[in-house]
Length: 237
Image (cartoon, rainbow, N blue to C red; front, side, top):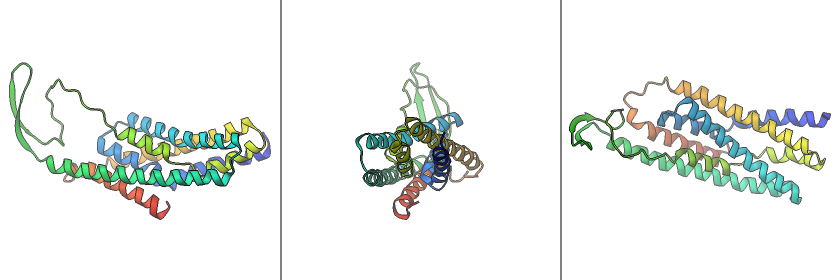
């Protein structure tokens, strides 16, 4: 490898790390959703990695298209800026909707008494809150959550602004190996940093005592994601 490519690799790794650490939207939504929805560590990691791949892959594809047709860097950066605004508004909308849904769910999940009749015609009565776990068998299947897919769509729209410029040099040198290596290093460092921060933060949040606020975990998660989106959009984080 040339000295220039080595320098680009170091630059890509550094930018990938700091770009992720300084952008709370890269990890906060996963931490809060994992905490509120009680995702396992494996599920949290899988969703984080898939969203990270969508996040980076969309920018790589855009960059390669720009390189192949000779689009100037400033035009690509304009497209990335537009995608960034769109992703921020999508994150705001997701956080707001989830916050409202969480509040509604919390208000409805007060302890109450009701009976269940099963297919065997046996009935039982119990007192519970839907926020807490209770076991009784039904034939209905649990509806799959749309939250992971919503996060994936948001991250696909979310741009990796620093990636486009550092792809331009190996492209100008007509070095396919350089393109692959630079994009690969940036992607691996970015996703690894996302995953590390998410899992460490998830472990820390699990120790926070929220007994009295247990019903409001979804609302808290939605409010946090909403504030994160607002910070990205209006504070430029």
